[in-house]
Length: 66
Image (cartoon, rainbow, N blue to C red; front, side):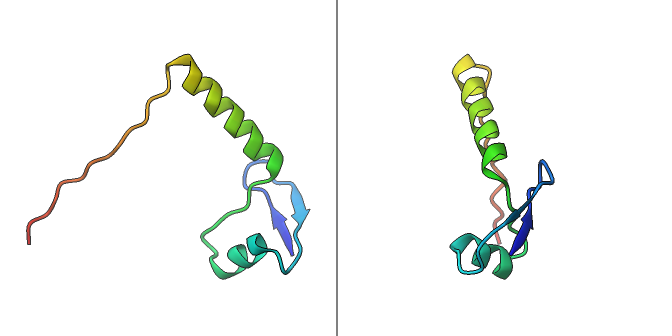
């Protein structure tokens, strides 16, 4: 199965029987990200978190009374 990374647009080949290929085939909302992009994002996020400038926002919606 041919897949394309959503960030760098490189095309990769996945085996048809791998769990990731099945997930992408059965649920089209899921996207593929290559290992290089995933590692790059992970490293930058950890560096931001270690700097103290990283904030996690939690959006609390109003509870609706029916």
